[in-house]
Image: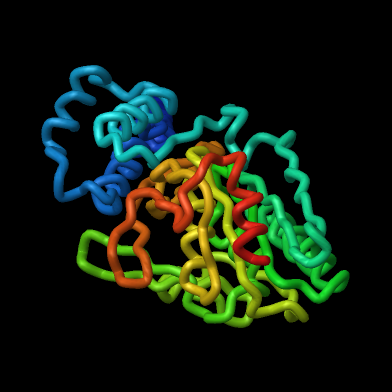
Length: 314
């Protein structure tokens, strides 16, 4: 009986030790998973000495003891790569669109200028999928509201100080203005071009649907001149939206050269709510040339762009 008790005791200790090992968090595994995504998807993957990056991270963080250590390693890797567009958001970061419930959808300014020019001022917005979809719908509603008011001679889309948002959000909002389903091109380092398309209110990034809406309206004032206003604070998806309108006819861009974040960013969500954004492709023009920022057709001071756009449409 005594020997049986000893055996049961040791089995119990063995069970506890196995259970403890089973639930031990793998913080190094968390870092490695994110790091492998960065190595695989980064737009600079062929230019980077990854062994050197790994050594620097191992020197500064010898042991990954918690989530924050893994996060610090990810941030350090992105800082070394320094592609100007990739990002990492901690779960409690105020700009984290997954965990910050206080993020509000910005107001869309829309009215008629000079009696027959439709004007839309669109600001950037980083929100979750549902809020981004709602913002797209509100942009489209603003567009439709102007469209019913007058026989327009043209449109002005004001993207000044717009720092971007989720892929597809703004193009879906102004989708009624597009004449062609192809609205953009991106280039990946494997010499592959990805086509951006809008078909049946679905936004295609290559063959993948990344956003969609359920509004099948049309515009009365379609195929009019489109003037796009940009400045040095026009960035990321706002730059893409401006460029997408250049894929259409009768479009001119007015203002100063944009910020230069003309690249695509893939986002990955952690269970904690943290978000990794990694730059994976570069935007192109209609001729498949990579662009680094957008140089307006009519270069002028930001405060002059609206007046010159009205003059061009008139």
